[in-house]
Length: 333
Image (tube, rainbow, N blue to C red; front, top):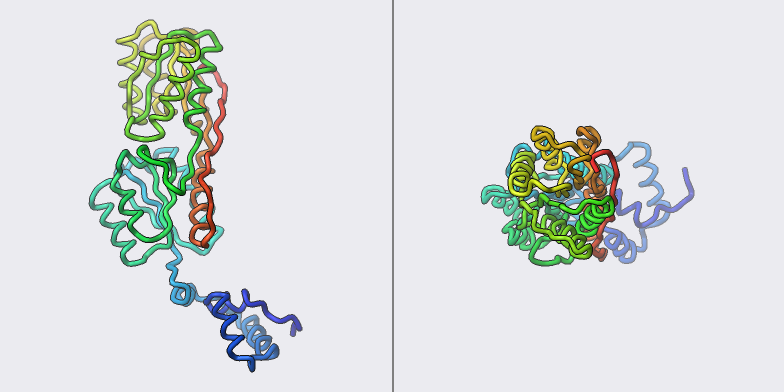
């Protein structure tokens, strides 16, 4: 038998209670001897005891679960490479803990009601929010739950206390600057939704680069990050601005569709029109030609969002984090 006395943390873990509870018990009951504690430890080792998650939940008032709430009700979301990578990052951190992950699609009133029921029943210890629109009611539901909330990407109308985001504005500016430096002058853009912070930020970065270069920024079509939206926007740009020689597209999914439209309209890429996307999802490496794009650390976004939430649950005080982006040059520009 080991002569080492179990620590307070070890006893707390085994009992499913807090360290402070163990400390108070020992202080109030001095007759609990080192020998008795060692006997308990030996019995536990012999029996292969595993702490009860249910007991720990009752003792700590924690449920052992966190929610990832996505402001979307599109069943195709799970085929979207961006969301798939974010969820993979979230799950990687969850697997290192003893928590469960609850996924809630909450763009509709029914979805938000489901999240409300989870929060009212104290069915989760924290919430992560993703893909919020301007003044999204999902934010109000989550903030009213009385548990920690972390945002994946800033909401458009305000900067919350706890969020993880990528440098969308800086990445878009770098993309436009690259096109300018390569000699392009009639540069267009297909933006993301303008009721989302990510869509507005990438558009602003594009405009800043053209303004600094003294170039007009009127070749613009607003879209929705979808492949269909990217194709329609590229058709509109070619109809309205047949002189364009480059296009910055605010997502790789839209850029892949834009490349297809350009090919169908007889425009060579990059000889006639250079194309730059954003995200660097797997698809970007397999378009024809391979897509020059701004890489953001998508899986890291999910991981860091989850780590921030766990720190909040453990009563730490994390600060907002902006993840870096950088340009990946391939054949399309």
